[in-house]
Structure formats: C-alpha cells, structure tokens
Image (tube, rainbow, N blue to C red; front, side):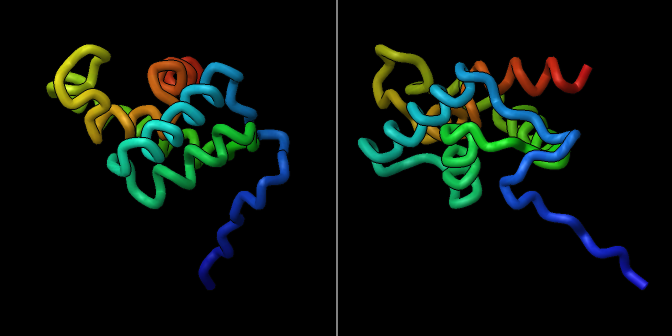
Length: 114
C-alpha cells in the first residue's frame, strides 16, 4: 500500500522554518517587479513568493525545492538585464530569482543545507 503524503498546510511543525525577513522582503520585491513588468516566474514561483513574503513556515521539502531552483537558475544572473542599470532590467530571470527569495533566499537555503 502506498504511503500517504503529508502536505504543508501552512501550520508550523518542528521541522518547518520561517524565512528570515530579508528573504520575505526579496520575495515581496519579486512580486512587485512581476506586477510592474508582467514577466518572469511561473505559477509555482508566484505561489512560492507569496508564501515567502507572508512569512509562512516552509517544510524541509520546500527548502529542498528552493535549493534546486537556485542551482538551476544561477545562470540567469549572467544574462543582460539581470543587474540594475542594464538594458532590459529586470530580466525575466531576475524576476524569477527574486520571487524565490533573491540573493537572501539563496544564501539562506545554503546555510540550512549545512
């Protein structure tokens, strides 16, 4: 018989962690960037940003997904438009990065992995 999967309902458990304020702010900035530009991020990224910006407790599984996102998308920060002052800023890749907690989120999940 298949084991029933437990989903995070937004309630904190002993293993869930609340994102730091810097991560919450970065995600909120990502939502604002997306609202202003209309580009960047997926439905999953937008949902993640809402959870982060609202300070929701995240499960270890969600943290692992964040690590995977950052590992796959670090290359997006090399593209033109990923840094302020560049043509096309903010690029869709920069917006997506922000939605997942930005540089603060990247550093946070790296610390949690140790």
